[in-house]
Image (cartoon, rainbow, N blue to C red; front, side):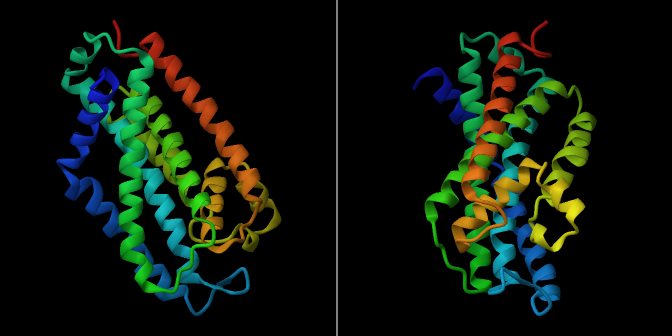
Amino acid sequence: MSGWQTLLYKEVLRFWKVSFQTIAAPVLTAVLYLLIFGHVLEDHVKVYDRIGYTAFLIPGLVMMSVLQNAFANSSSSLIQSKIMGNLVFLLLTPLSHWAWYLAYVGSSVLRGLVVGTGVFLVTFWFTDLTIQAPLWILVFAVLGAALLGSLGLIAGLWAEKFDQLAAFQNFVIMPMTFLSGVFYSIHSLPAFWQGVSHLNPFFYMIDGFRHGFFGVSDVSPWLSLSIVGIALLGVGSLAVQLLRTGYKIRG
């Protein structure tokens, strides 16, 4: 195996060894969301005139799980290595900054997809859920996980202790995720908040992913793909640049 593949294997093994915490727990959380919100709102909310609320909610929960776990994987791995002091062993290797990026983001994508698949397999039994365009589902899942994995890499490089990382997650990732249309269509919002939602890149990841299931969405999937692609290019470039300069990991 090449250097980046070895590091990728190490990162995958890291989360797989504690899969009860890194995979099973997020799946259970998503199921609880579905049970609570689906039970309360199923008979009161219809989306796109023909889609029940539970069916509408499931793709949002799947994608939310993908995004949150992709971010958690790269960010937690880096901050743990920095605090425990074993990051120095990686610094002694001849691995390039691209190798670091591919390994950390690749493992984040894999964890996000595994958790998302688990959420889907557990929740799709709750309602009749069709898949109209599987390619859109795969594209947005992979791009979204890569974007959040890159963002987690930046957060892990920036943070010097767990409190800072928790603040980044609680004040940036969580609000943007919950305000992205996971639990509602933005067309149900007042005009002002619809405009605000269109400034949130997480909205386009959720909406494009949901389009793959229903064939309809709040905005064109091509617009969502363009915005997510541009966001990934920007965030990924920043992460690679920080790794290249050794930001907060080299003395």
